[in-house]
Image (cartoon, rainbow, N blue to C red):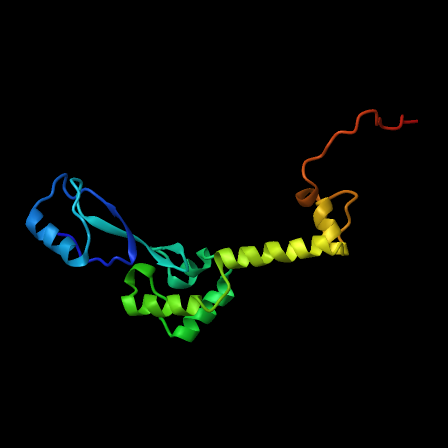
Length: 170
């Protein structure tokens, strides 16, 4: 028999014993929660949506919040402390708890806004031609690291120089 579900979750139909046994009760349960009955079975809860991101259902809230760009471990702990929501599995959250989490997460700069802010900061550094801006343009590290041997993450794959040969050994 299908459980009562809410529209706060992304859903996916699954098979229940290869058929819709007792389809009248299944359709009633889904009708009550606004779901649909497909030929394959009832809808199953997959993930909650907070801050425009589907957070995993099987993980604890503290870990699940870190799937949002701009929220790390420390920030997720602070959010749980501020909202006084228990650190339980996401699927066990009530609608009220999800609403309070959404309101708290909206106070932070996350996802698209944060990415845009970072991109504009780098663009500004490049335009004013400061040291860090010039290093961004050249694709080199900007915090004083040596570049003779390492810095492959920023410089990219090695490029062979034509005509350069090793000195003969004596």
